Image (cartoon, rainbow, N blue to C red; front, side):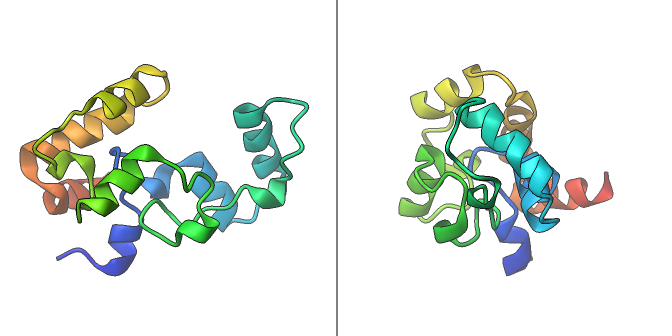
Length: 129
């Protein structure tokens, strides 16, 4: 059975939040890493401060999530799902577009594995890595 803490760390798209650079920088309160993330996401001339890069995990509190407008997170929540891999429409056009941006191959692999063996079994595998 997944704990509430576990659920908080499972991204709808397949991201394992515990391995996410953004989540790690925020939980460690690493301001330099948060600054690098802000620049990588918003550009070198961004007005976004490191303190504005916050995250409680994709299943955590939206008011401190770095991207509360995430389509996948919102959709899964509206459907009462923990992850997109549980949806009969998986993978939907929004998710395919997200994966095609680059840098999300691991999330895609995770989501496919979740669909194959279930989220609880996938999460157990993640803990053993």
